[in-house]
Amino acid sequence: MFLNAMYRANVIIFYITEALFLITSWHSDRIRAKTRLRASKEWIDLAEKTADLGIWSWDIARDRFQITEFGRSLYGFASATPINYQGFLMTLHPDDRQPTQLAIQQVLTEKNDYRHEYRVIRQDGSVRWIVTLYRGNFDDAGKPLQLLAASVDVTARKQMEQELKVQQQMLIHITRVTTMGELSGALAHELNQPLAAILCNAQAGQRFLAKTPPDWKELRAIMNDITEADRRASQVVSRLRVLFKKDEVVQQGLHINTLTEEVTKLLHSDLIAKQVSLTLHLADNLQCTIGDPVQLTQVLINLVMNATEAMTSSASGLRQLRICTSLSDTATLEVAVHDTGSGIAPQALEQIFDPFITSKPHSLGMGLTISRIIINAHGGRLWAINNPDRGATLRFTLPITQETSS
Ligand SMILES: Nc1ncnc2c1ncn2[C@@H]1O[C@H](COP(=O)(O)OP(=O)(O)OP(=O)(O)O)[C@@H](O)[C@H]1O
Ligand SMILES: [Mg+2]
Image 1 (cartoon, rainbow, N blue to C red):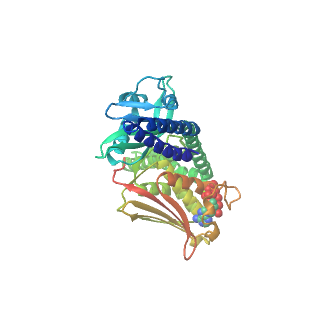
Image 2: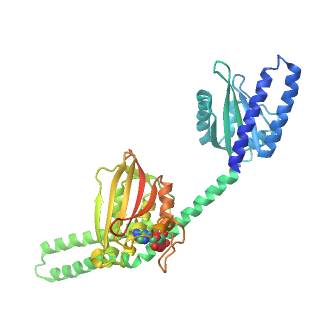
Image 3: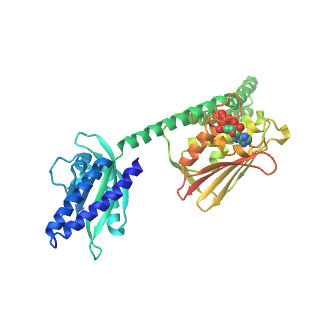
């Protein structure tokens, strides 16, 4: 419907151009021009009403705006008040003024139509999203005379997009928490290891303290071990806290190799429990990517968990998980999670990304759907292939950036 409106905007701009042509030929044939001008204005009026378009033009030399009544209501301009360029800019959200100026400048220098979105702040403080299609009108020498524009209010669409985004974030968070719940046994074990080491060391310390004289050298070594185990335990807790938190999406420079290593540390106990051997092939020439570390961690966890689950039916010596990172081209990095599991039926290679597709009795079938949403939102691609020998490989790409990670 919106595209339809923009198509009509194009048609209407054509009519405005026509009408302006008639105005300029005013002197040569005043009466005929008058009649045709009236007809053109009626056309514009009719089209404007059907498409909910506000139509306006800016006479550059005189710095005067011509705007239809409906256009005035879109921008919140009072009836009959003269409008100039500065007055127009002042109705826009402060953050959108400079981009709008640049967009208009571009239309007038490059002589191309241009579609631009911005926010308008009405007198009552309410904010409306407007999309405008601009076209320049030039003299024979190419000098810009006028800017023609058709604006449409897209606030409802913007609000829907925003609500969808919020719901998507909630879904991403809920599925992440669910995944962490599934891993709770392995994670408790991961935490238990340093805690058991601390207990063991503390008991040994008590024994060395009871000696006369106490064995200070041993005690010092024990203290170091306790500190180290405590650090490991708090690393596990902080990794988990980050994944459970429901924060705003953060975009930052990050290294995919570091994220991959973090994920394998987190899933270490789960892999051991499932008798999966892990090999990492991390390319050392990888640049940063921009993204949300928590969401990308979520993708890696999903892929690794799927791979290990697909290998449960393989003989324990055959459960091999290989995670490779590489440079796919100068602007893209690639992560591949290879397994030696059951593989994927050829007709299901694409279906597995649909929601609620699962072969597991107690699963939701949302892991890959969410992972694809996340990767797409990062400007990458996620897909599955079967390995020539055994199992499947899930691959994703991400754009790389020159920025350094924080
Ligand atoms: N590496 C893999 N090898 C074989 N089949 C796989 C692999 N990864 C995914 N699948 C198939 O795709 C289905 C969908 O995966 P997805 O991660 O979306 O959901 P799930 O793992 O079943 O449930 P959850 O919502 O807990 O992730 C799986 O049930 C499985 O049948
Ligand atoms: Mg899954």
